[in-house]
Image (tube, rainbow, N blue to C red; front, side):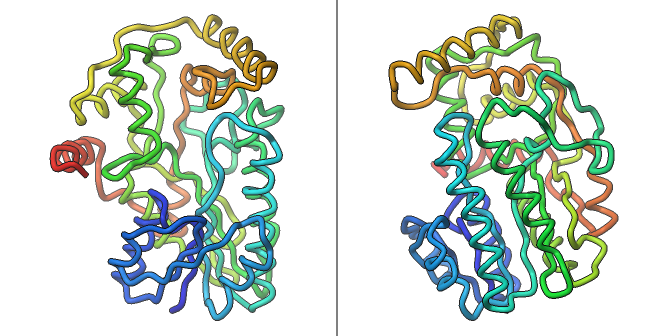
Length: 332
């Protein structure tokens, strides 16, 4: 089958591409840059921007399915930049499916669409966990709009599904882990609260497997069509155990200090104001959204994904840490 993966050069996108190629599919990837790893896998690289409808439509020509993985992530930046990538870009992908009669669309969403401030979610599922409101960051706000558009697009001609993987990590991570390591080694990393709030994470191979599992079950009228699913390792750990486990695997110092939530939240508000007023580059070291995420329990029930498309995490947290440790030692 001919499949387009948007963002196939990214951390999750590459893992999905590897699985699809291993299953014999002909894979193309729409990216803004060039990735040598795609050449090695025999993936056809297509240069383009999600916000450019013509580029997306041309990339989708001749495809039979799309994995829409690309997005603008992070907790800081102009709303417009997130809207263009996440809302307009997703709209362009849906329109391309319509234009070319593509029948399956697997969309990478995020549990952040259900973020509701400093309100813990423990064992929440797709039925009892509503969308968030009054988001303090553009990322969850725009991903919510995009997810809703994908699910609304499910009909008699296009089967869609949205997956919400929680905190993806593992060998090859070029986003979360490098930032944690840099802050830990500089002594600037602290827990917000006592660090005993439990959170979900998802090992990279499990996240990719969930996408392929959903794709292989997705069809018009399938149980998973038109629905969103939480994805994780199914093994919530405390934030302290999670962060320090990841740092230990890459020989970085553990986090020992902590800051009360109220202090971190207030600091985030002040730093956000300073960054806007002074037009500072980069991201503030703390934001209100980040303070809420770090201090709040967030873990979800993944039984629906198991029931509707057979998702079972194959790599546990401890095995994942061992794989990360071995890969890091080899410079990967």
